[in-house]
Image 1 (spheres, rainbow, N blue to C red):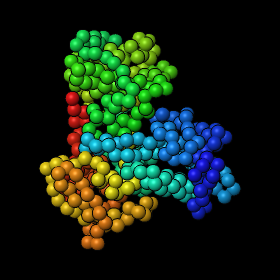
Image 2: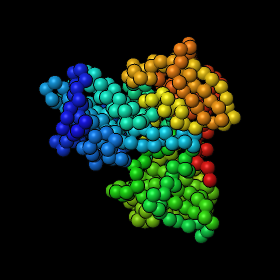
Image 3: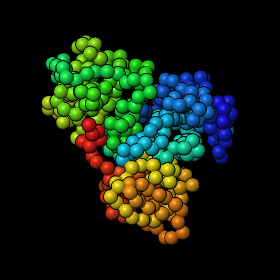
Image 4: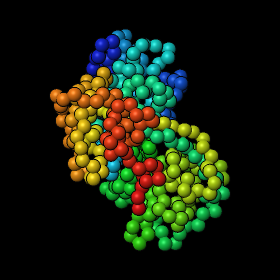
Length: 380
């Protein structure tokens, strides 16, 4: 598919938006009831899906009069589940033009994006929706709550770096943040890649990593997308780095994304003020890739049959035999009768999140899939 070619599906045609359409995207964003925490996507690629690694794209749905009626951004990402990398895509800013209401446009657009993601090798899809209930109907399920917390400037400015901790940037081709995360890094911290104002900092002591930061300078405030500290010395050094990053200007606000019992809660004196909340949701795009791609405990063995009905991704519909052995999963189609598992429950199974209410996932399989809570996301 090229940027000028439109692919039709029923009442809508889909194509990567051009410059004129992007201006319309901005207008729709201003009318939409909710949007991504990052606002309108500034940089897009006009290349076909998968041809521009790491670059966000904006896909548009056009009605029969060739009017743009819905849009969504797509960003490739790697999700780390059980200490293994799972390929995925983030869906950003699903927006419908309220002045050209076209029933079914948003659903048709999401179905199209899921098909593209699957064709390009994705196993899962991620969203940070403004309306979680609507995305649950599309097969997504909540993973964990996230909070944007404001740090007291006095705490940051009073920090003294540990002299035994060395501060450095990420070397070319080096992946530091990935190995440090043992959970859904893509879902829990959908940080933009380093570059264009986004900076990675690594904290080392005696050759070992004791902390990591990813932060972004924006007008009037500093957004911290990832903050990990192994001990008090690493924490104090991280605060000193943020103080330098903020330029020691009193008017610069410092905010950190986190959730649950993460490093910020463990080391911060008192409870930081929460300014915004988000609820990342995950969806399975490819049953086999998702279940086989994530990590599993090496001391669990068993075989389960899962009956999946997925109206948006027909290739996922069927009975699947899941076999666990030695920390690896094998998934094959099965002719045997299985337990019915809905797409939202399947998403929780893949994500390693125990369901709020046990629906159909076998209890022993749910326990085997469970990952550690926020406090165990990073191990030093």
